[in-house]
Image (cartoon, rainbow, N blue to C red; front, top):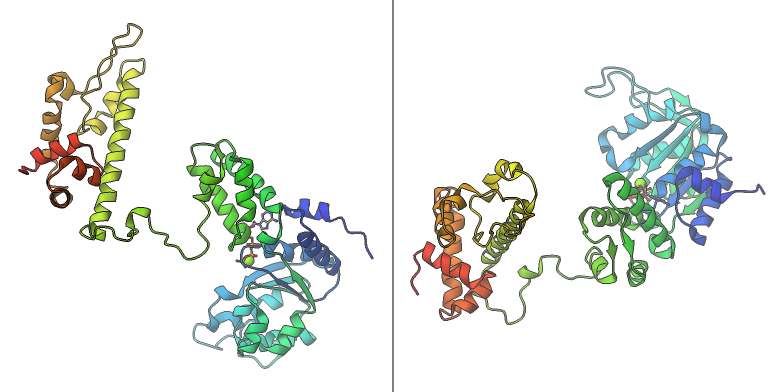
Length: 424
Ligand SMILES: Nc1ncnc2c1ncn2[C@@H]1O[C@H](COP(=O)(O)OP(=O)(O)OP(=O)(O)O)[C@@H](O)[C@H]1O
Ligand SMILES: [Mg+2]
């Protein structure tokens, strides 16, 4: 038997991992590659079947011939025969020319038929014939043609099930399955999960110019015990998400869990939407959505406040602040932003509204400004008023509890009561 250097194959085809099941699959691919045998690659979605088709072609004497990958699930049933085997001019509406199919143009090369389970039964009959004796007939023709194509097929569904249900030809199944290669699911690849995590983390760090994400030991445990139904594709997506979103570059198990979807049942809606048993039903889902909106608005306003403070501390002439002053126009509660007393601190830039007013007047001024934009936000404003009234009613006009329920400070509630002319 030939001596197969699995490590160098992995390197060449960018395959990460060292688990025995993966190594075995690579070994079978390398052994079968130089023959002309048909290969069926099976494995769950996202497990990495595609690289195997490339290994088989590249390590075969056909490597200088064409390699074409076709996703059988993506070609409409009406055109797949013509795509694969070609058609004669006039054989159907729109067939203005005679056209060669993939089996003709790939003569001497390899065709990768991905998602073979999706192939229509009629096409399966044509495929069987070409696998048996290299013969095919163009759509609308009666002339038998010959071709020499090696077929590698892949599926993420159980083809035997499809055979039982009459959706896949049994004879074709056995013909394809001469040499099966099983790509293991990620959850059965042990430490490979962490290897892949680090690889993707460093790839995305480079792509997004950020620091790579690292994991604490308990997070590694958490990662290794996740089942990854979407396999490598899912892991890659998760790492990308973390790389872009996470502020702390080291994740512990708790943080990581936020990115791993809950595996069984469980609602995916935000916690605020989930009704706790016995929760007060007077707040409808719409109310809750509005509450989310208001919470977001509050967060934005907090952020603006923070940015405003930071900008006033910046040395310089306050140009940046002037340039962006529109962002701070209707900022709530900015009255505490005072000039820095310290002598090293530069004079902060004041918004026009601040220059004009004393501290006590800010809120009033802010409200004046917000009234100018009242038209746009009318429905949102009236919803807000409605929610405030509901909250007050629910808590027997106790402002502290109402404010708490609404997620705003008592002070803001007080201001809003004035704004909406709400009398207790
Ligand atoms: N061993 C590996 N090392 C690094 N990346 C990998 C590896 N295997 C797969 N990938 C990456 O994982 C993703 C999914 O792989 P691939 O498209 O081959 O899955 P698949 O098995 O064909 O899935 P499907 O059945 O859904 O088509 C791709 O982005 C691929 O680059
Ligand atoms: Mg695929």
